[in-house]
Length: 114
Length: 112
Image: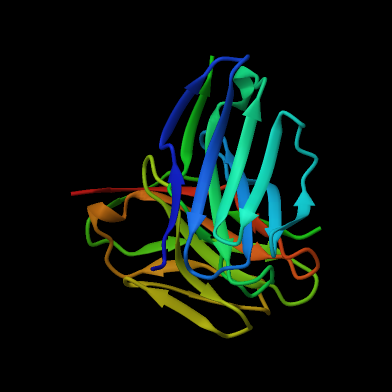
């Protein structure tokens, strides 16, 4: 199984809502990532987890709150988002957090904030 | 810091034409290099990778060679198909931070 799954595929939320994005992998990878991708731009790194511990936070606003409950699962909790947060949110995983390790991406969640 | 520069798109080709998408990089040390492809409405898929100088990555008819002397990792395919229409991202893995640094992406459009 070489797949990273993400749910939901699409999400529409108001600025006062609380929602969560979910990412799952069963490849035994110990590093997991959240990226944000705006239209016609490359992905931007948001968070990195290594062995279920947060190792990189790219100065992301606190309205985005990541969580790694176990080695297979990564969540992104959303609260009080702004319309400019509308984007494609991509999850990725890699065997380890290392320069030669390939990151495998999920299909993404397309988020619209009204 | 490390960076990746890709040719501006879109690249428009007829089916069966030869494809080259240029990618050059700036890095300290010896990064790993990657090409990812993103089809419309989808996430990124790894197309190929190379981890050291002179390595050639290949997959689905696409090839790229890690050229340290020219700091390049150009993507090539001998005969493109309509189904190859997508956005192609060149990326390097920064040895200091282990982060993936992406180029801006190149849109490829292939017409029958």
